Amino acid sequence: MLKSELRNLEKKIKYTFKNRDLLKTALTHKTYAFEAKTPIEFNERLEFLGDSIMSFLVARELYKSNKYFSEGELTRRRAQLVNNSYLAQRAKDLGLGKYLYLGRGETMQDGDTNLTNLANALEALIGAVFLDSDIETVWKFIKRIVFDGSYVF
Image (tube, rainbow, N blue to C red; front, side, top):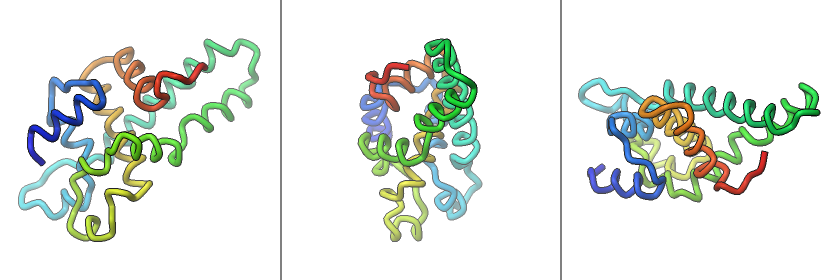
C-alpha cells in the first residue's frame, strides 16, 4: 500500500499517526504476514488491546452517566455497544476494507468485505491509536469513529 493511501485513511479517520508502523500493523491480516518474505507483525495483538480499551472506556462512560443502573444493566448496555456486528458496520462505513493488507487466499475470498476482518481491523486501529497517543485521545477517536459522535451514554 502506498504512503498516500495511508495518508488518505488518516484524513478519513481524522487522526495522524506519529508512528505509522502502528497503522500498518493494525491493517495487516495474519494471512498477509504469513506470506511475507520477512517476518512482519499482524493485527491480532492490537485487536486484543483495542477491544479491551474500548470495553473499558465504554464501561467508564456508562458508569459515570447512569448512576442508578445495576451491574447487570451496565453489562447489557456495554455488550450492545461493543459488539462485532456493530463494529463491522462502522468499519464498512469507513471503507476500511480497501486499506487491509490481506494474503492472496484471503483476497480471493473477498476478505476485504468479511465482517470479522472488518471488526477486527477496527479494534486493532483503536489499539494502535491508543499506543500512539493516550487514553483520552483514543476515547475521542472511539466516540467519533465508532459512535459517530452521536451516541449519548
